[in-house]
Image (cartoon, rainbow, N blue to C red; front, side, top):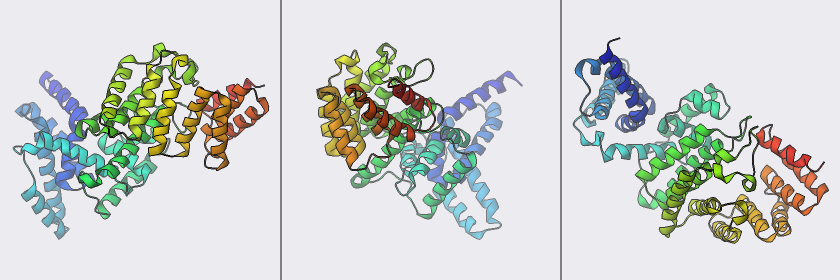
Length: 417
């Protein structure tokens, strides 16, 4: 293969890695169809591989790819129009209303708006939560179906069907490819942030499988939050990004050499990623300074207090309890109440925390939540109530699949004999 051809192939490969999601987002807007846009994207890069080694690199490669993809999609629709007359009208509309390489929207703010539209479309609340996650990872992040299926321990066929159904729902329900208007933005943004946080949590603490963590999913969630903050610098976007950065910074200390979990209080804080902590604290501070403080910003502030403590004993538990009090006003869920109870136990002692946890569990809302039983077991163990602690660990273990987390629970229970 000639040297020039190899060099151009490297350029095209880099463009695909760095720009294909941007090109796809614009093609979806122009063509109005996910599958047609994906076909057009692939054909545009095939055309680039054939033409650029001969003609040279265009002045605006991304705009060239958008234009090439659109024209190939129109050609494809015209071919289908021989068998379906309705396709002829579609091809005409695309040819009349489309844009070409000279159109400014193919490179600049417009193309970033397309990425924002794509995020809101993939995370539309009309879609099932698992469909939002799968579609976002596939269309916005560019993960393959096989990669997503492996991360969520499902078959590629099942995952592909989930994505197909989500696209059909978008088409059949007429879900608009747009950023919501200002009055609707908070509710819709919450759905987007939920999807990003779901992806992060699955990577940070895997819900199934042997591995405790799946780093690629956490990295994708952080990358997606960075993109969203660049496009839409809302305080809650900043809060979520800061929360994830501060949480991710602890990853190197979260497991021991055998892969078992290490509690926050026992972690070697010299292993924490300091640059990530500094960035996370700065982003959370920006969110808090906005005075429009939401649940993610408060959770980010709690993570920042932990990150700023030189060791576990230096943690400002009164401040953390105060932040949980504020969080309970905005997000009064049983899990938040449980976390607040643990913070109270750290501030006031295990008896105070147990009193709160027992009151929460009396309602039955946390009966099936393994971490509630584990938190109760830890506090009972601190109190010296061996029999009750054993019983609580057994309840937690019964709800935990075989994993590194379960091994950790077994070890904690084993201390009791």
